[in-house]
Amino acid sequence: MSILSGKNILLGITGGIAAYKTTYLVRHFIKAGAHVKVIMTPASIDFVTPLTLSTLSKNPVLSSFTNEDDDNDLWNNHVDLGLWADIFVIAPATANTMSKMATGNSDNFLLATYLSAKCPVYFAPAMDLDMYKHPSTEASFKALKSFGNIIIPAGSGELASGLVGEGRMAEPEDIVAFIEADILSKLPLRNKKVLITAGPTYEAIDPVRFIGNHSSGKMGFELANVAASLGADVILITGPTKEAASNSLVKVIAVTSAEEMYKAAHDYYQAVDVAICAAAVADYKPKNVAAQKIKKKEATFTIELEKTKDILASLGAIKKSQFLIGFALETNNEIENAKGKLKRKNLDFIVLNSLQDKGAGFGKSTNKITIIDKDESLTSFELKSKKEVANDIIKYLLNKI
Ligand code: CTP
Image (tube, rainbow, N blue to C red; front, side, top):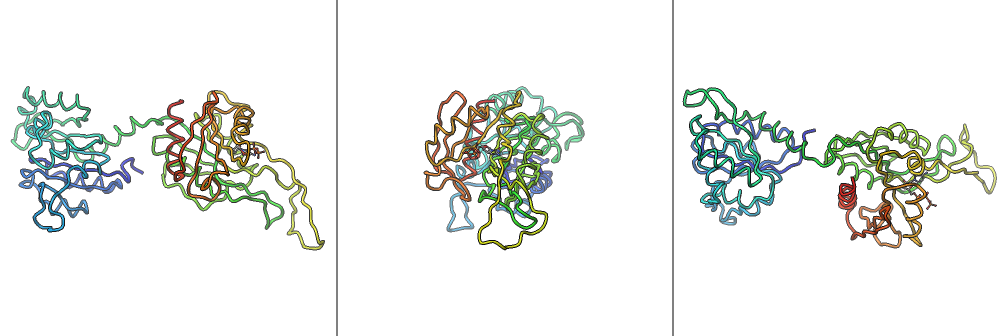
């Protein structure tokens, strides 16, 4: 899956012959799973038609502040569009547009949107070789880079003028590869391996029955998705669940029992940088599992249970450089109980859910957490969706590693 999947990409096209290549650029972005909107300067419309780009991007193409064709939507909002974008790509970027970007000129819709955008801006220059080397163009490059914009260098080759040299816009597939590589290189969890446990465990009584719990696994899956989206290599060990990882970079290992989860966690633990135990592991399992289905005979029936292995505690006991995070679900004396687990299990921080908080805990789509650090400091969060909670936890982690 491309890192561009699901991203909102705004493509600004300016008036150079390389504009015709942007039809392929839009196709590549769409193929990568991005949402694309196109802005064209009036001059670029001479080189490639808005109809083509609108068809390929599946969105209307904008090129002016006003929209005469639609009485209900007369004004095109450059501020909203700038905020919509996760990435703004200006390709081709002509010498004229770059010099205007460098000086804050906003005399067309593309430039006004550029000034409004808060996202990373990439620009792919395209012009003739002498224009490319002109000191004023070099001054524009310098200014644009100093504003934090990212240049996608032009290549060398035959130019539309017939001259041969530097100034050719990077090829569409190279522009996509450049942006993907740039984003990946800046992800905060790149080169980090993260192990996450999630979901319930089922402890067999006989071939058809088990002891389980109501954990949905959602919290662990959301953590896995967030970590993967920040570049981590994620191994998600999950008990039985209906959840599916939305990020295909998450390696899912399905297990059933606490013993299987224990084994899988230990198989991977030595090689990971971070381990997060979010699973609701059964604390007890039947001491003997019946080989055949148990028949109902007596009025009462007793199952002897024995403790399962505590996965988190066992990981804490052999911890070397791993950063270890646990969860605690408490009903009373929450902070003290969670602090006890933090110490006993040798954790770096523990995420406390109190069942006294409405909307927190098992089977819910929301959670309300307090993070207790190993230095005993507390950070409390509002009731949020589990996705937002996962973001908070990973953000907290990023400040610690
Ligand atoms: N945990 C685990 N393996 C177990 C039991 C718990 O890895 N066999 C992990 C959970 O994933 C969670 C943390 O330990 O991160 C806390 O689990 P919890 O059940 O709340 O705590 P316990 O230590 O089992 O204590 P108690 O049930 O008595 O509250």
